[in-house]
Image 1 (cartoon, rainbow, N blue to C red):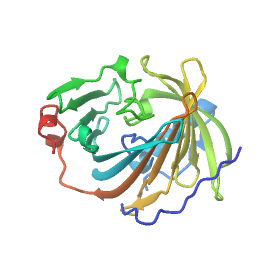
Image 2: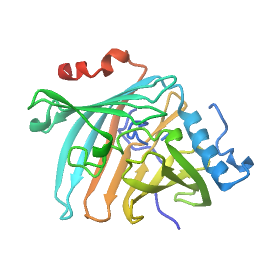
Image 3: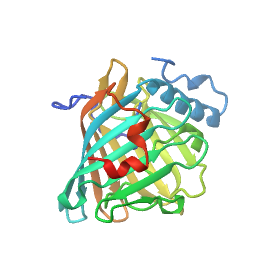
Image 4: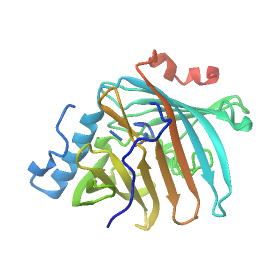
Length: 278
């Protein structure tokens, strides 16, 4: 199988992993060392560990994100979002998404405290109600602000929360060779039964993810591209495009203005501070 993806940086994109989710991307450990693993499961796990090692040590970053929501008729609506991410040394990262546009969503904020060994904590601040709402594990399959990304998709896919299996190597566009792995969520509340992930062998960047629902139907496909490298080490995608195959809807995330090494700290990621976000 071949799919065309550009590995060239986009013009005008200056600077996720996030969360998103983030979500989503990557020199400590040489890429693609999994060939030394004995079984398909060990090889899949080692690839995931190597990818994480590639991205450790970034500290923090801020970025701007435009969400383009598209219905099955092709009609579009936009969301403008500010994103802040703080790396945690012994736990999952902390992430904050703040909506600036449209006007009726201005001030809405999602705070995520990621964890490696238990479900992430998520809180949503709704300015119209002037209250903070906790997102329970059972509600993380819900749409995030009307997009094709769920609350589960907005969290970092921590290595410890999945089991893995190496599937195959194959070309994946523009001269890239990719390794394809399967990851299965360990948390019972996940909306997904399994996911297939395409990473290029050279840098272990994610180029595509296929999501399968609890009935093992192909639910969504995420494609990533327009990668740029920052601080001579950390790769970030300029685009993340999610297509829902059951509804015909899609959401594009366009990332700009990455800034690493800002003055963020834990005080910027508190539940009580959500009410003061501007």
